[in-house]
Image 1 (cartoon, rainbow, N blue to C red):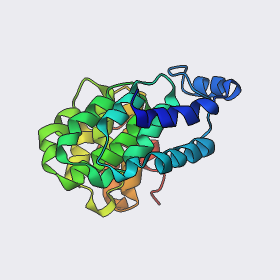
Image 2: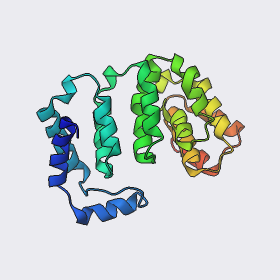
Image 3: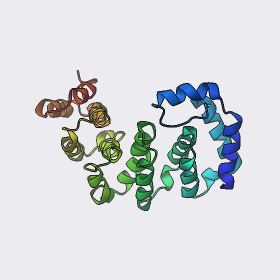
Image 4: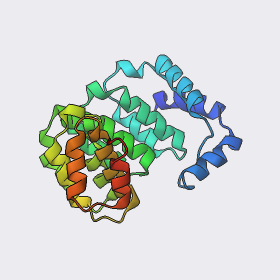
Length: 222
């Protein structure tokens, strides 16, 4: 095991709590085992890990993230997401395939949504050419998590949102019966409505969308 990872594993294992783990597992549809470490405690341990390992002073550590992703308990993937979020300035265009691998591995909304907004959103903003090179194909992929990522990667762009692109991706997925796609469409529209409410209203009124997407997308519209 990577020595850096061993430091975090030591702290996490010492806080293993089976009583907490079971309800956490159930909340995630029994898809992943948990150590039973709740978020505030996990954040404290992760901060201690950063201090002891000095990992944040190094180049982005792909191998550490992969090892965290391979661990069975979900808290390790959450630790990887936290580390990624603190390393956004270090990411380059060539990292996108790495994050595509993470998106399509151990996939569920709790990791995918953060990967979409943070590393993918950051890379696409810095290197917009990746949109045509990669993300366009994600929007029509057979993998629903890549499609969800394409819908959500601009979530925090606000006034920098490429409206034409957002609406094109939504139109490509508007007929989907998949809950996670319908929800993502609504979420994307809701966030963009904070910046351009009239544009979102017009889009919703002029397109055939799932009731869930309309309900979510209209939440902030006056």
